[in-house]
Each structure stands twice: as structure tokens, then as C-alpha cells.
Image (cartoon, rainbow, N blue to C red):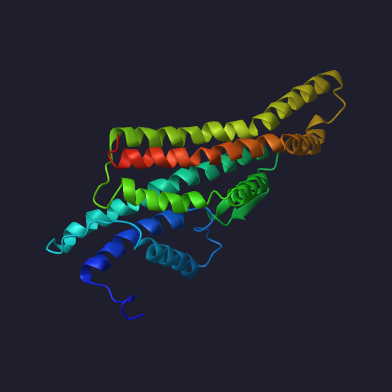
Length: 263
């Protein structure tokens, strides 16, 4: 046991690089990085994953003659690698929440907000419900295993000191960020289209029968129609989220190749 816990200075630096990258990925991961989980538990996960990965990955040794100031950019690069991979998954959950925000606004539920434990900000009830659904699918489909695969694969394709912030990488990140809004719109499209026709019908009814208080009638009607459409479109929403998760491995591979100058 003493040999296991004894590290040379070179091994400690290697462990520091692994710990930094693993921590950046896991602390941004939807499951491992949840704010509902105590910080000491999250750090425990990072420590365990780092110790497990250390013997099975090849990390070039840091030259000990280098100054401590040269170590800072290398650690920042490790943080960026982990943050980029974690950011990719966070974009999917942000897209799901955006779809819920758009749908909730159309239904008139924007005023009923709750605290999202992941982002520590107020979100609509419908947005939080879709976020919980996305989280359940994330765990049920074993997508969290992609993080373990991405951790090991990242050290193969992007070794320490090998990060390349190239123009194609920046373009890919911008494209993924822009796709978040399109995905959110796709998730909310059935409900938004239905409520648009409902609003038009209520407007025609108000012109035809002015005695009816359309404003009072529209509030419960929009909520009822929205819930019915949401229930009917739930299989489509789950299928879309599942397809996004299935493409996650391909996105990880693309980002790692771009970061590691691999053609």
C-alpha cells in the first residue's frame, strides 16, 4: 500500500494533468456534475476516475527542469479540453430547456418558475420537466459511459501539451452552439404551432361573438391544449433527444480530432 501511495515528482505532475482534465469533464457532466450532489462527493468521483485512469493511459512526462510558470498554460489547456467536451453535452440540455421555455411561454406558464438545481436559476415548470426527462434518458441509455470513453480517448488523441485551438475547432463549437436554438425550436414546434392555430381561432371567435371574454377563456384553454399536445408529442420528443444522444459519440470524436491536430 505504501508503494501505491508513493509518487515521484514526475508522477505527481502527471497525476495533476490527469486530475485537471478529468475534473473539468466530470464537473460539467450532467450527472456527475449535478449541483444537487455535494462537492466532496463530486471531487471524490474525480479523484477515483483519475487514479483509475492513471495506470492505463500514456501521458508524456513533464520536464522537471521547466519553471512553475510554464506549468500554468499546460494546466489551462487541460481545463479547456475537459470544458469543451463537457460544454458539448451541456448544450444538449440547454436546448431541451430552451424548448421547454418556448413551449411554457406559449402556454402561459412563464410566470410559474422553479429553481433548476443544475444551473441555479429560475426556469419554467415545463422546462424543468423536459430537463428531468432528458436526464432520465441520459442515464437510461447509458450515455454517461461516453464520458468514460471520452476520458480515455482524449488522452490518446489529445495528449497533454498537445491542444490545438484551430479555426475548424472554433467553427465547430460555434455551429454546435447555433444548433442549440434550432433543436429547442424543434422540440417546441408541435406545441407552438397548435397554440398558434388556437390563438387564431380565439381571435375569430372574439370577432364573431364579442360578448365572450376571450382573454379569460384563453388562459385555461391554452394550458389544456398545450398539455394534450405535449402528451401526444412526447414520443417524438423522446426520439429526438435519443438521436441527439446517439450522435454524441461522433461529436466527441470530431472535437478530439480537431483539438489534437489529427487528420
